[in-house]
Length: 250
Image (cartoon, rainbow, N blue to C red; front, side):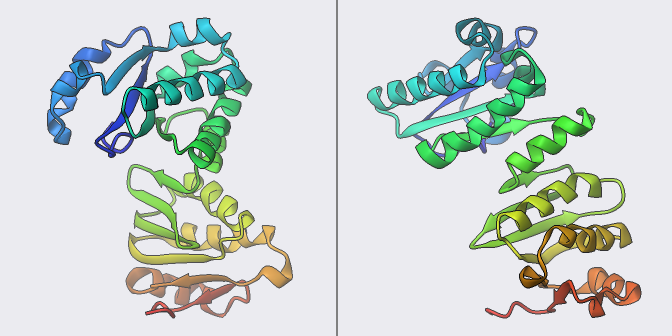
């Protein structure tokens, strides 16, 4: 919630499933996030039952896209600087009529961010159906927060933070592959606190999608355990990886 509505004057639409008492949830959780629950009665936060949104749009992603544009225009007319959207997996599964429409809706949310400045915070559990979760990670690869790690595209490179190992590397792979496909060939690992050999294998494997003239994948900020694993696995001499302990731009 806090991430979706960081701008103090954005209107925030909180999409919730019909089974959730959204008002009670927010009144309990907002103080812990440092947000005054008074925003719930100020008009800045709007609670949106996803079954109502689905009824209004037929659960079609294109109709939901148009609805959010209308919400943005209304927020602007009401004096807000913009619009932000948030919702968890239960909300997302009930706002569209099937998984194909849900995938289309997630792509439209990314389009809304790029074309209209509408920010979204989409929340899915790690137990989500793997194919759908991979789609979500691919669509939103520019900013992902997992349980133990996060990744964000800043200034043309993928900044990775936290802990990566065999238990979560499957969720890291689609982020890296999509970043490479988007032309981002530098990963900053200076904030990686822990990783294992599965992560190194994933990085090497991800470069399979690159043409020879697009290689190598450059890792900067490499130190500590990551440097030791790269050396132990022979990855430091692998032609698809270029490793630097310090940022060349530093």
